[in-house]
Image 1 (tube, rainbow, N blue to C red):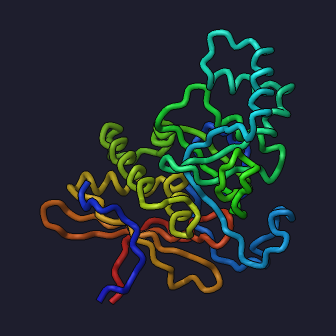
Image 2 (cartoon, helix red, strand yellow):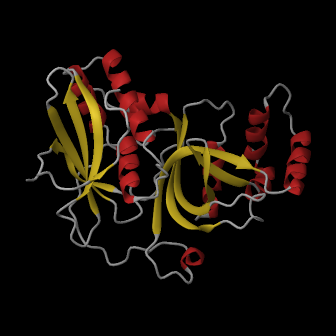
Amino acid sequence: MEQAHTEVQEPTANPSAVRDERPANVPPFVEPAAHAVTPQACSTCGTAPAANAGMSAAPSWIYAIGRIEARFPSVSVEKEFAQATGRADTKGLTDRQAMQAVLSKPENRYLLRQLCFVITIEGLETYLLIPRDPADISLLVDAIRPTPQPWDLDIVIGMKGPIAPPTVCNGLMVPIVVFDQIYSFDREALIKAIPKPEKTSAKEFAPAAEELFDRIMQLTDNSGATDEHRALNYLAVRYPAIYAKAAEYFAQNCSLTGVYLLPSALSGTRNILDVIFSYTNRNTDVVDKCFVRVDVTDKFPFLVKKLSPYYDRQ
């Protein structure tokens, strides 16, 4: 009998370690090597004292994919921004283009610190963003695109704190996330950055990669806060092998019929998940599974075992 497991899938059966110097608009696709599982002495080292003050519980890490928006926390800030815009040369620019142009100027950096930034996931306001290092405020400017598109994506990595008081962002009460890194790009750039398998044409590979990415993004309540969703989001943007395997199965007339997550038997003192992808042949209904092992103990998930065949334990 198959062992009980946690299932995260759609109802339809057929359808970085620490921050780097990569430009913010470049997808973070670097296929990671498998890491040996070694114990670490402190899971909260490097966190801001203010964020940890008075907290005895384990930190709640965030690895979320959504869209970042700038908001005015009060009427006075909005009026101050309007005055700064009036002094700038914004002729011919749209409102979004004008906002980015104004906020990008060094003399208006004080305004950038006054705004509040919200990440929305599936159209819902999810987190209020605050940089751990004040210098990282520039990452938020890059997230304000002058010409936004429906498939714009922002990845936020950080630690979830308490619910924001209503005075912080004009009455908005969502959890605060102290972020360490933000990547901003669009889905097309992400798909183009995935290394294409040698035996698969670009015409076949792009739709397969897009479908798998969309399926992961549409999983119910994927706010990037649970270990399961952090593992999935990490794989979606950091491990291209899952897309190559999806294209291979689609070429064999198979459908992606499920994505499952199980605690690994090798967890020990670490929090390790087996992420299992289930494919079913459209003609024979034969099910084939493959899995990848991800460590989600700390803020930055990492690969423990590369994509391999999966066999149900009896």
